[in-house]
Length: 177
Image 1 (cartoon, rainbow, N blue to C red):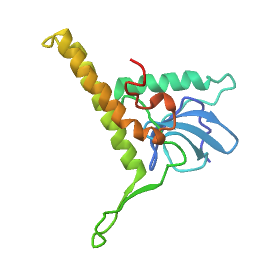
Image 2 (image 1 turned 90 degrees about the vertical axis):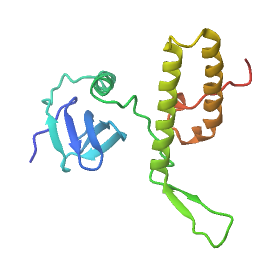
Image 3 (image 1 turned 60 degrees about the vertical axis):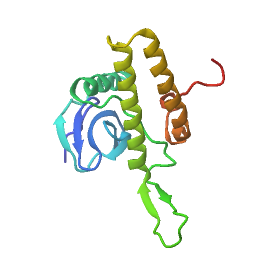
Image 4 (image 1 turned 120 degrees about the vertical axis):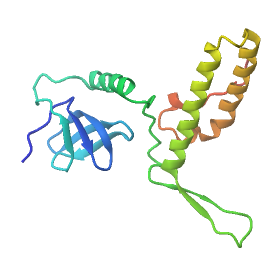
C-alpha cells in the first residue's frame, strides 16, 4: 500500500497530467490539475509522485494550495490560467451538418473546440498587451486598435456558454459606452 500523500503533494497522472493534491478524504485525493482543473482520484489509483508532502494534522488551506499552484504554473509554464469547461459540456461533441446531403457530418470533441477558443482568447490578450506597450504606435492608433479588439471579444461572447466560471467569459463593448 502507498504512503498517504499530504496536501501540497505534486503528482503526474497518465490521463489528467500534472497536479497538486488540494484535499484528502478516506478514499479520494482532490487534485487540481494544470490542464483539467479540479478532479477527484482514488487514493489507490496509479499515478507518479513527483514530490510527496507528509500528511500532517496541521494542513494547509485549499486557498493557499491553489495560490501556490497558480504561482508555480506562471513560473514554470506558458499556460496563463486554468480555464475549465462547464461540467454539462465536458466529454460532449459538436456536430457540423452540411446543407448538402451528399456530404458527411463532422463531429468534433467539444473539449478540443473549447481549448482552441481559450487559446484564441489568450492570443488576443497577448496582442492587446503588445499594442498597449508599443512605443511605435501613438495613443490614437492604440485606441483604434483597442476598439477592434473589444469588438473581437464581443463577437466571441457566443462561446461564453462553454465556460464554467463566468469571470472568464468574453466581454465586448456592452450596451453603454
